[in-house]
Image (cartoon, rainbow, N blue to C red; front, side, top):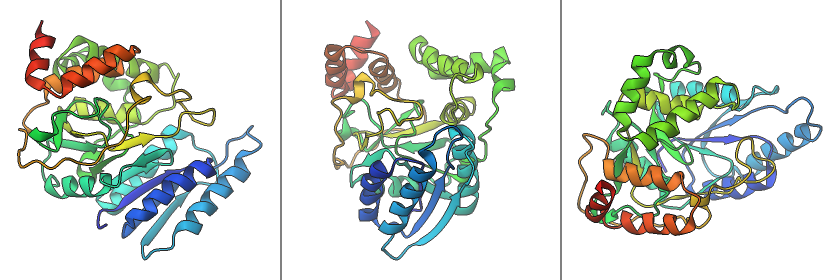
Length: 311
């Protein structure tokens, strides 16, 4: 596979064995590894970090250009990942990004590589996402859906987009006009509330994040993410060792990864798909299995979904 891959690891050896083992099957020609160091006050971290790195090195048995960005001290998830990505994109120009808990479908890598090549010079495209919480969103209409959602569980982007990332977005969020423009761009109250709640959690110091800032970059620059029309990833990382997410959200509990579905059609990429984004926002914000099933059914029929959502 020609597209570079950034793989982010930490202290979960058995999970890394599984997900890096899957990456090994794709055999990228260019690989960049990012790892944080052990945390103070966590006695097992030093051993687990060493074991995790050793697993990766032991599985690196194909012809591949490898660069490593391993920290010996703990920087925290937000600083370590964002700083590592800044250096990685400056080096690589573009890349597919996987963390140690993401298990992609085999079609994920060629999907991202094709989209990276196709939209390399389009400044309105922010990133590419393999997570489709609706399962399938009318894949006969095209392989990607333009969206204001930018989930980073299996994704890809270019240096031209990442260069606008800033870790500290507090000054921007203090400007009411900026917040108002974001709400206007998102297009509906539920989705705007989801984003602003995340930003408030970040500003209050209750999360050590980098992906909320990356979402802010998308919205502030009024770009779109190309979301796969079928779900291409599984997140295996919901356990006691997770940094933020110890329990899977309801929409993930019965969400398989699927193969791509061929289609000669292509959606317009000039603006976010509002029907898709309304369904997407509703499914990530509900705990009801019945409602999740209904939203996934509606996602198969966007014209019907538009009528239902309007009413």
